[in-house]
Image 1 (cartoon, rainbow, N blue to C red):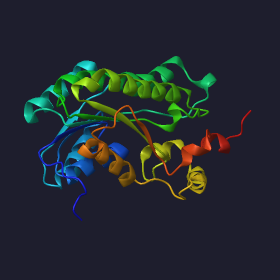
Image 2 (cartoon, rainbow, N blue to C red):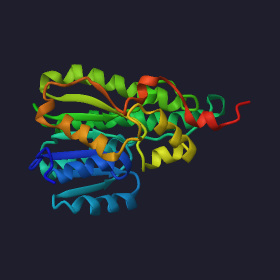
Image 3 (tube, rainbow, N blue to C red):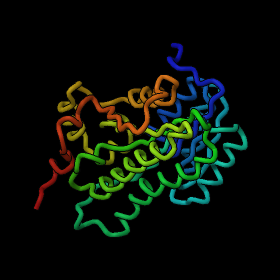
Image 4 (tube, one colour):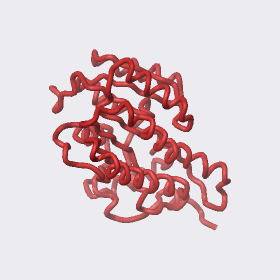
Length: 265
């Protein structure tokens, strides 16, 4: 089937782009004709992702790097720019999360998630600015419902993602005059991702699916479709938007399915 959007000749960079939702987005852009560069901490996943993306016949670059390392982020983005020129779409999706009660969470554990999600997002966006197409670039952050719906056992992720949303809003205001759009996608529970598997058991995932107003868990292509739209000219007047792609589950308010299954003292 012919892709809805044509990104031939455009450059896309995806941080955290070697697994899950982010790889699904990278794959969709490659299928639509874009040159795609991905970066993540795991070298084996980088190799595997490059092979998957290359199936679409477009140029692919893969880098091992940690978003917490600002110097490495700067180096990678400079290399992508040297190879392909201005970046048209930048997706910032690196994230970390695990379940822990606040009283059981060490300062280092809290800091680890904030460093990856919040500080890492700032590192990527700040370093990318000089290499973005101006005007015309689209930045897409991958947020989470925890940014506005409090979730027990995830105080670290709630704090970090709320900060990511504010970065998005501030940069949409500061960089709008340069023709740079900044938006965030808020995925709901997406089946087949390691993130959902880590945070929710089979029983909890079944409960989520029953609660979603549209009656199912999300799919990778649901999130990728929104990312393609936000990177396209059809979204040229959209910036500063926090967009749920969740089947409507966020309308039901805060709930933590992992806590449902625990024996709470």
